[in-house]
Image (cartoon, rainbow, N blue to C red; front, top):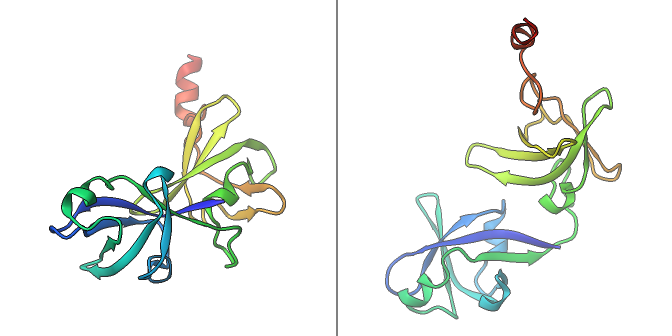
Length: 178
């Protein structure tokens, strides 16, 4: 399974260096000098890292295949990917491990299916397609997602009332009845 480790941003300087938006917790390993990274779209790569640095919390890369600003501009938006199977860390999962899992409440009531993870600056969101086709976004934090059982094919979500489609506050239900 291909795992996205970074998204190429805008050029930085004239020598082909680009900023990257990280999607990995270990950029020093994934983006090391000499690494040949596959790309999405595949026609752009692979790209070979010739320089990797961090400055003020932002990562910058140079590639053997892009040695000037014009070439770097052509890489904007390209995803850098690696082949991975399953995560070997406890309480850490790759997005492809979660997609397709059954989402259920703590009492076992089925809610829907995990579609994807959205990576946001503050926290990740678990996107669940409910039975009616609506996609709901649930903050992927242990208080709201207490159980992730990949081998069992399920994830337990305990969102606050009203976060899922079709749920209304109890006051709204009473108003609708009148």
